[in-house]
Length: 292
Image 1 (cartoon, rainbow, N blue to C red):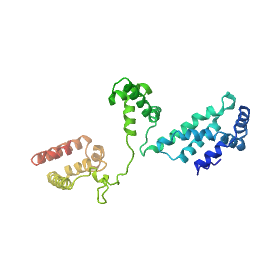
Image 2 (image 1 turned 120 degrees about the vertical axis):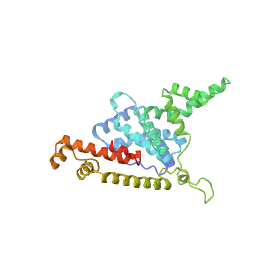
Image 3 (image 1 turned 135 degrees about the vertical axis):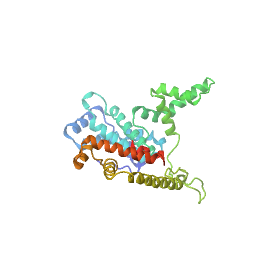
Image 4 (image 1 turned 180 degrees about the vertical axis):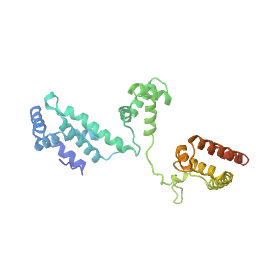
């Protein structure tokens, strides 16, 4: 069933004109929807309690969301309540629907408060909707006693009052203290002002560091080539296959190819590394990790 909330004031007027259901009629409509999926019964039930949904949506206008959207979310919560309502429990539909309407509106407000997800746990949700109110209560009480609370004391009181960890209070206080803004926004009102993104540190390597690194790598390659040239053909082949391939070969496979035992391959490899080590020790200690 589609709900049109293009004009919230018109919707409010229509809701106020809707019928008031007595308990027996409400029970009959709820059973008709539950047992027979009677859409006319559902429409009548939803229409009768839309005034409740609109009233609850109005309580969340202070969070900056458009009233049309709040009403729509309230209507969705009302429909979900109708779908899950059990008329045999002896509870009026309005009492049951209040929870679903509030939950639907709160989820919408939290999803749209910030580009960063504001909170997903029950404690964070409780803080989002109660932090300012509880803080104001403690500040009024302290003022009445002639006292002043520092920020840390206030957070501790809120933590105990709401029953949530202190770090959750600190996190939510930070989330609610500011709003999102674009990194492409200008830092000043001047047309030639810098954008905020220009103030971010560039973490990529700087030009001088890249040149220095390229020079060092070229030097290391030359040193390694000189050290490799000091090996015999067999030693050079074993070092290349064991250390310079993307998938190094095993001692066993090299032994089979060269007609040597696995232990002999290991000995030749160790001797080749020792020769290279002596060659490189005279040039730089930075390349010794290649041999380890």
